[in-house]
Length: 453
Image 1 (cartoon, rainbow, N blue to C red):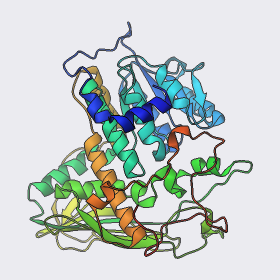
Image 2 (image 1 turned 60 degrees about the vertical axis):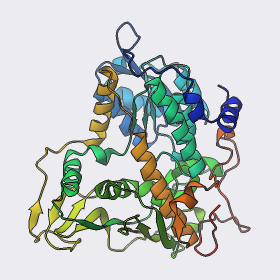
Image 3 (image 1 turned 90 degrees about the horizontal axis):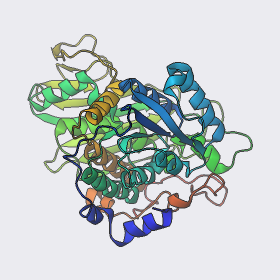
């Protein structure tokens, strides 16, 4: 489908309804069509996480090859291919004539694949819905690995959810980059919490207190090109700090509580105008503080605290408090455990009530191992729903923080706000979609001023 016909199809009939007319492939063998049973991989987005993900995808199955690549920047695409060639050898890289660039190169790369092949989606998060949709609704059956989060706004998230209904009807296997779900010791700890080892779960806490992401502006780049090169500092590329940087521990806390919040309130934004190295913060949209309280239907709470100010005390974890003690778990925690009492800073002298017995593992690698095992052995595999739930929860928190309002999940799910309303037509030479004020400074959410749309 062309970009225009895809959008018309989505708006006029809805991909969910269209999925009903697609024959189910769920019971069909999905042995790869190539005579040598080789799985070809298209890699979309050659940034830092992408460089890890493509290596993990190649390591997950010895009979795979990097077959097509797309990135916004031509040089970065070629440099990334050379890096993979250096680590995996020329026999695993077969994309010399299939390296594409600009913001629509993902279509060309995905078009190179055949039934049963895999696309690895590691672009800036603002592009996740359109790249996922293109792969899921392709005339071929393309399996998908999509990095988290799955979108930056609710319209994009709904678009991806609709495309995933098509993916399920086609029997596509889909993995998502919430890798902490596949750290064996975290999984065992969450199961122990849900089995009562912590007693009744009372509340959960999400912490990420660290220094700021630093801008690396390139001379000669347009605003849009610099934003794509500094994705963690801009809302339309990453979803903002709450959505991108805290989604893992938001997901783990909700997983532990076996539920998702129905409302939230909070505040946050920017209180420091400068980096520690003297750059003015108005050159980006990175918040430097935020506090959010999420409310569940049974009255329990999940509290979130974040700060990106240099030279301050740091903390990075999820904490689950129950009637028998507290658990430290999640991203930022080496090995999780359940401790006596409620202190969550220094646990070295605290009594351990329970700890997991699972072996340690590389969860980034495990998530790819599981996906490729499902592809090879014709197992159902689709991790999208809990990733959608985690993403919408993070967007709920961001919205409550930016507006300063008490915001319900229904309010958020009815939002029509798009951070990139022209995402389908965006090109590398397009104007930036990021809003600026009359002085040329990037706009950020301001409690009491910003409104839910």
